[in-house]
Length: 77
Image (cartoon, rainbow, N blue to C red; front, side, top):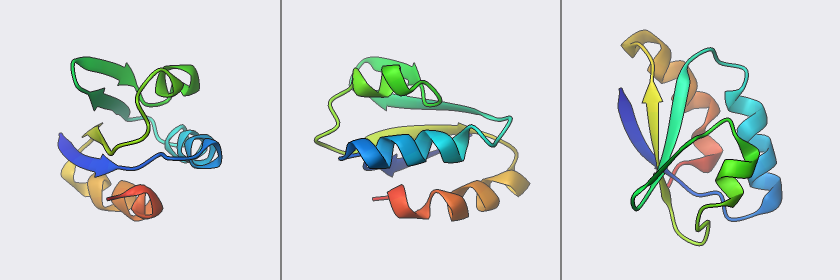
């Protein structure tokens, strides 16, 4: 598992982020304070405070992490 910080400060960023990660079979969790939600859930993301960076837990093998991080580059803090 790898944890990175991402910023989803607009509706368009949230939509494109969800579209990108749903292409993967891996599990992704967003952690904001004491809340942990499925990062593939657009409704769940909108329930979080998007004004500040959020932790993204990526549950993938080391070989997949680099590919995933490359695609998520526009969202990384």
